Amino acid sequence: MSDVSVQEPAKSPPPERKGEAREEGNRWAAYLPTIKTTVAAVVLALLIGALLIIFSTPRVIESLKYFFSYPWDFFKFAGIAVWDGYTALVKGSVGSWNSIERTLERAAPLICAGLGVSLAFRSGLFNIGAQGQMLAGAIAAGYVGFHFDFPPGLHLLLAAVAAIAAGAVWGGIAGWLKAATGAHEVISTIMLNYVARFLMIYLLGKELFQRPNSNDRLSPPPAESATFPQVFGVHTGVLLAFLAALGVWWLLERSTTGFEMRAVGANPSAAATAGMHVQRTYFLAMALAGALAGLAAVMQILGQQDSLTENVAGTVGFDAITVALLGRATTLGPVLGGLLFGALSSGGLAMQAAAGVPPELAQVLQALIVLFVAAPALVRGVLRVKAEGDGGTVLAKGWGG
Image (cartoon, rainbow, N blue to C red; front, side):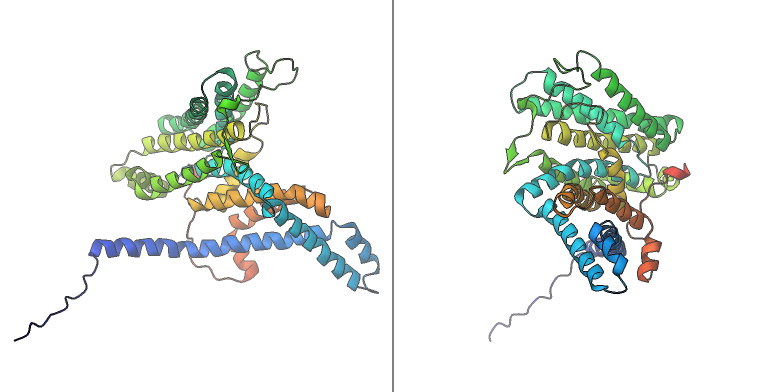
């Protein structure tokens, strides 16, 4: 009598695993409408940018004088102007390795600061203070970078830690004020931006920060031992920006602390009823946001070897708000938004040099993208797209108290 083998039925995954997979799938599906709206916003901004290129090109404007007698010239010159302008933008941002280097180095601080603003958003806070937090980080990184003499590697580590800690302290002040006194974080972070700016101006007037033999408000550059090494022309600090994004993703999506942040951001009253410490979460969120802004300063000072000046942070801290809005307060969003804005910044100069397009057009494109992203109903109305949910809606309720 032969043995008959009976094939066991395939084991189905445990119910909890099914629930987790379904929840993950629903989460990604919820973001699809947001992705569509964001892509549409970029496309609409580029279309309006094309019109601006057309009507800022002299020979196109000249052809309008005889448009009705020979319209072909207008369309030909308009097409050439748009093609040359956007071709120069692409080549200037990703068209060569030098362009890619420039794009990555400009994107890195935007990614870090944008992650900080997004983290605060997810906790229900509107962090307007990335600029001041960057300046605090820059002061610390610059001082440790040019004042001390440590071995390579250790010097870089100490300067970077000092910047991150200074940014965390500066952000933590606003978080503590919110938690302890109920002070509005929008107001406190704006005021702290001014405090950081004037603190920088004050320190640059002191001998301790003043560059020798210079009458300008300018510090010495950081020592070579305190700067990031370069690989293929790109400083290795850029890698930290992507690692920071991975860390923020893990914090928000996989940790208990991140769950509390998201819960407080969604409904602080319900979170408090569930036993979560809302005030502590506010403080922690702002301190972490400041630390990420301090990391953005690390990209500027120790990555690009910038000296301390009044404008060392540029507009990165304010651009970070637009990057976070563009990214809809997700983790991947600020990375893509930072890369996009870094490409626009890098390619803007190439547009002027190669196609004669004003470099300010890149800033106009950024503003248009943010305008359309911030007004999804407008985008859907223009493109006649039906609303499909809010996906990655920003959770910050800072304007409402």
